[in-house]
Length: 94
Image (cartoon, rainbow, N blue to C red):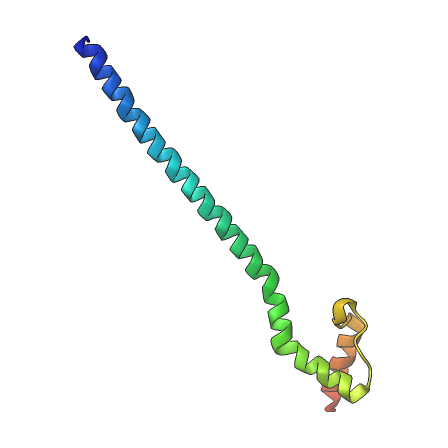
């Protein structure tokens, strides 16, 4: 085999290996990005429900006990009218 052809084949082989490593790195970073995006959106969607349960739910339960009414929103969540009643009763000191 000619030395020039052998050198070119070795160079092509080295470039191919380097290309393969770069493509694997790109795919790996792409997966990290997908997983990061999923985690980000999960946190963004779950946080309001968590904050509702931790901070607003006790006030809603207090409102339901003192006024004897239940929340009328979907999934048992209070509507804006229910929240306004809760704010008014809280301001009144009940």
